[in-house]
Image (cartoon, rainbow, N blue to C red; front, side, top):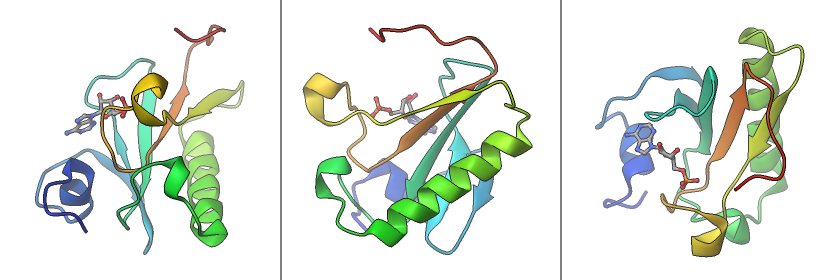
Length: 112
Ligand code: AMP
């Protein structure tokens, strides 16, 4: 836990969020500025800065499984997108690993 990290505070429930699912090691909550009808952020509870720092395949597996469960529950049977931004050129603004789960509309490519 990093005391200054926004998503650590959300994981610790000291800052409120619209939580849609949680496990012992992961939390999922709705993005405050949604870019699609479903826009959920899936995070590990453990503070990991970005994908660059991931060294735990089991944790990654849990994030994948939780995301698929949420996509199913949200009714995204036509598809969805799973994105993580890494570093400043990647567009990362919160430096606690998170995956954007986006769905409910047709996504465009390439992303901006
Ligand atoms: P990124 O730019 O990839 O680091 O994504 C950070 C995301 O966190 C953005 O989509 C923000 O809208 C979202 N966000 C920032 N603060 C909050 C918050 N308090 N609750 C939910 N989502 C947030």
